[in-house]
Length: 213
Ligand code: S3P
Image (cartoon, rainbow, N blue to C red):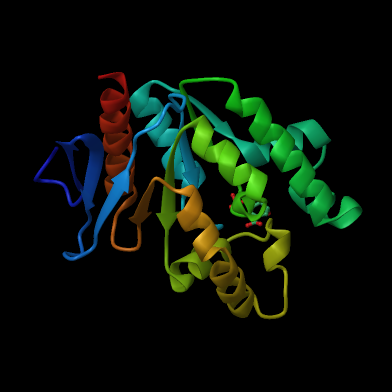
């Protein structure tokens, strides 16, 4: 617990373990029941451009966990870039690979797993995610996402005439899916990369400590 950081996480024992995560905006207190027998993995979910990979790599270093990225594993398995998978085989084929890769991660421990933004679109993945580790949902506004994803064009789903409208539509469609998969949501818009990394790493440490006790 650090009062000097903009992310303050407090765990309290109320018969079960609950977490209160207080982010910079007062009033945004999220209570999450984190009980259950899941594996000691940290999983980052969230829309494209929310910083899952960047934050995940840093958090993995901080926790001494292995970093894995489902998109990178898919590319390795398919032997071609994501855009080529979408173009040559279609989104369904990509989702098949995504589920297979997620399943392969599910049997291991001590990993930080960064996932593709659409992983929650398959109901079976949501169940796997929640059983495989502590799931943190990185959130960001449409504006932040457009700013970040506009820097490169490696996301086939955003290669549309109106990426802003596409982001809004996909985010709307997925909001409840992310919510149902996540143990903890964190809004990153007002946080620096260091602050997000700190919040995620400390939340995970507290979670894993609570599970051990
Ligand atoms: C996708 C997100 C991408 C990648 C693929 C599909 C999505 O990952 O898996 O382009 O459906 O949101 P990132 O979230 O890492 O960009």
